[in-house]
Length: 473
Image (cartoon, rainbow, N blue to C red; front, top):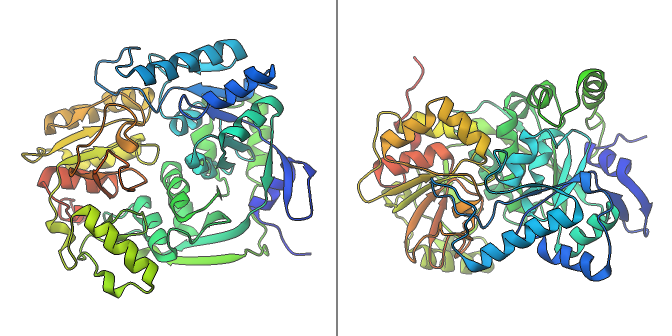
């Protein structure tokens, strides 16, 4: 008998009913996290049908997309549309009996930061939510994936969703991370090698010694970013690091229940003889700090390289996409990427706003100042991350460097609040997407790691962070 993948084991454990012979199933979902942006229509549907939420305790509602991140926090929303979204969100929480973290709640933050730090994400779970980056939870040995509004409504009413099984892809990471290279660089390298559609239709499992050596927060970064290659699910086998991260969290099991759960979680893994539909191997020793030059996450190069020539693209479609991207970004082929000046530096988003990310950035900012003409902001992923950064002195490092220290939220990742770039402004960004207009109409986004963003902020242009880091003796 052929061994089974961890993905298949998780799906099989949650199947309520097979709906046809093509892999369509009715899937039980353990939990969801709701935000004010993607949930309104789902609740409106429930109201119109006169339905209740089947299991309110399996959901959490968090304001994160539209709220301002100014240093002085209030419940007031400067935008009337955002105010209505938040008010309706609160009404739904009250009327349907779901726990709600509002703007002033000390547990508020980006949903994919808040759920793990509260201990709501556990190995073996299936978690579906109205955001494509729900794959973050794969870092804990859970299957997380994004769903649309109609599926949110169906889940709230039944605790199930219609789900089509995915093919499986294993990405094996070998070697050792070089100086200045982070998990953000690693996953960006994977994306540029397999393409923005390279994982479409797949559930990805990250494996190998590099993954084992990574922190849980670094694994979260990869679990989120691989969505930009089209992945619809991510899993990483849980280990002792995951248990150490979860133990003692507010919603984690306690006492004997913890011991039983922990022992069970450590058995969650793909079988040794499991077969994957596709295998990808990357020696991370070959990876350098990366930066995007275009308007798709796979349009990336090493920071030591120059902007590529579209004429060298392998297909006409990619050639046309590269020409369009260069026109939008205001770049020309052959220009060294390190010569490109920036106007703005942003550190935040569900991808890179945790305490580990802020520590990396602070290492670069310490003893330096933001370059003249550059505006830099840091938006922590949650209020708890903000408190921890202040306790560690990280916030002071930012302030001393001339960086704006903000409140938590999605912020400039998708510019749905007042954190918006002006047309033509160029931003070094730790976010996950660099699409046209993502950070504001006409805005130009270069994706990179938090440390690379900090390096660009203090030099005024895209910079190889390794030139600013102390090399080990």
